[in-house]
View 1 (cartoon, rainbow, N blue to C red):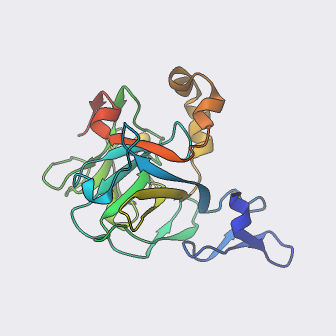
View 2 (cartoon, rainbow, N blue to C red):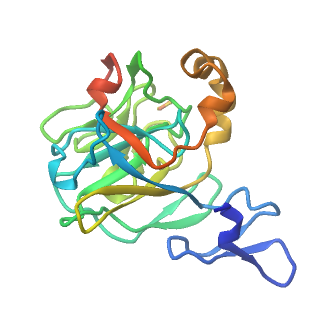
Length: 243
Ligand code: FES
């Protein structure tokens, strides 16, 4: 579904009002390019063998990576130690407000975010990852408590329990959130992205790197369909760098 179909134009002006409950306020964009919520194909999270990952099988406080909505855009799934807050108001770098609904699963502890730092787009690759979840019993120099997501490139700290609001460091807006749900059979599904679009910049800035891993831009930008392979970050990358 095209993202612009989620907005209706009022009175023929360029004012767009979100028809989706995840967004509050009014978005202003002549072309809809700053919309805060984009739907993509609904995909199921599966393990390396293609078997459905069940919410109850996740290891607490372990960061998992799946690529969504594009073949080369890594997202981080974490089962947090405590329930998240609900209906958190977030603000993008350009001032747009939107609502993150909260964690999913029976205890509302499961969250997913695009693992591309909103500062300079640092992200996990097969070789290394400067971005990770720091479990509550671990330490980080990025902030005075753990249980947070840290990008050690320039020490940005994000709080995954409140929509990945920025706690400190160079980042000026939350990580994009992945809209996920846990179905009645305990399977996990992704269906959209919440937050200011960073993918266009990512594909431009990392053109050479993506060519190395995905050969052609079209393959890197290909939309994921049906299912997304989900593995622990420690398997996705050779080295996790965390300060
Ligand atoms: S790129 Fe993540 S803090 Fe700079």
